[in-house]
Length: 575
Image 1 (cartoon, one colour):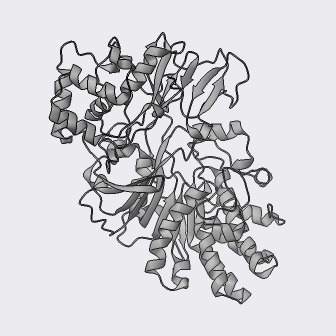
Image 2 (spheres, rainbow, N blue to C red):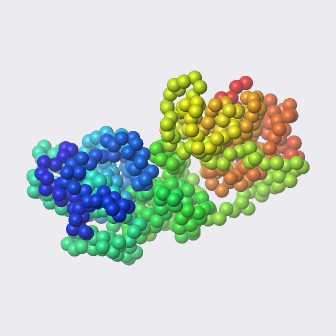
Image 3 (cartoon, rainbow, N blue to C red):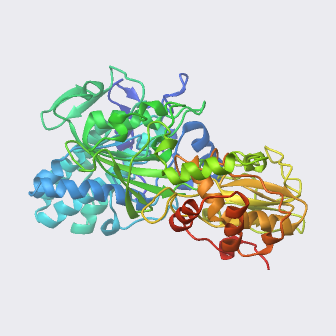
């Protein structure tokens, strides 16, 4: 079911109830025109747009579409509380749910995977409306009862978006969803009058709005009390209109100011449960680019946060390697005394104190003494002199004009993340935004998120593998670049050095998060002239401790408390 047979349905789904006109193409453009009936019939879902269109929408409209499995994870968490707190199915159906910046409404109904475009059968869907319709189908037999409760279900789901074509597609998806569940149960189509009634409901419940501009004219409908209400007057009400607020808000404006912070704070003011996915950068002790709005005790020590789930490369096509799902419940007490439960990709939960200010003096005294011993040694020079800042070649996680296969013998190898296949290729004259002097040299690539800081077993957490890169090889922002060597032998020694507990313990001294970009200052630069650099990593560790006259008690502490790494953890290592 991909089109309507009655043009009246199109006209209803294009209505903007607040302005008594049609929705416009985009509220971010003051000159944007209304969407006409003719144009509406040509609007295509995102998965049918060209790759260029998708990229432009992500870049210019901050438009990021969420994979179905992420929508399911977030909705499952909302359901867990909803089903516990509302034992009658009718009460569950009536719970009001809001999807902010809804796009094509995948959190309300995932008729298809918005990334891959694959249609999803009703029984396998996990949208909030889908769940309500499944419960209705399981508890009603009479068609009239089913339709009555289906209308109530549609009245209970809300969403908004700044882009008019998204609003139209979201409305259409909701209508199609009800039709498909009805057909699945009764093996016949809904009558046209019922579709029009549903369209009227949806045209109120999914509306066009800029979620960060408080417009007093924005009206939505309270169906339970049969009255219109001003959306912005719902903020900070003692009794919340929405039971749950879910979604994947825009991350930043064109000037790179983070705006997901505003959507998180707004969502907490609107609902009793909040489940959003956005970048994990707010967990660091940073105030720049609007992060100050969440870098405070009220947010970071909030006992109402049920969990934080750090996810890597969920959105491989945008500039956000790490995102996190945050589940928040009004009145909840996680009993963690200001700490938070943090998962990594849904696993290995740990309790973490989110820092508001970098507090290096909270590191173990042995580590601070170790750093003092090394940095005050004669002739100390820091390895940060030969270690790049973030994006050594100016490439984001998403790389333009690359190939997943090598086409020519002189193509440049570009190390990326696993979602791009770990390695991609550029032509010999590839236009790197930054011209690194190490492009035609040997170097070591280290993940910029190195040492994940989840310290259940080791200080600084676990460390990913590193790479010895050859001339004519580069990397995306996934890696930092360390060293610029004329020969492989020296690069190999440098890689082994970085894998010593000696070096990684000194990295830990200045680390306040999983990111290591600015944490290299206490690691001494080496000239690799000693004969023992050809030994194994564990033997090099012993030699380094002797070289810097590190006291035995500190040596013992370092060797005991940091993860062991071997030559097997160095990609491209050759004996």
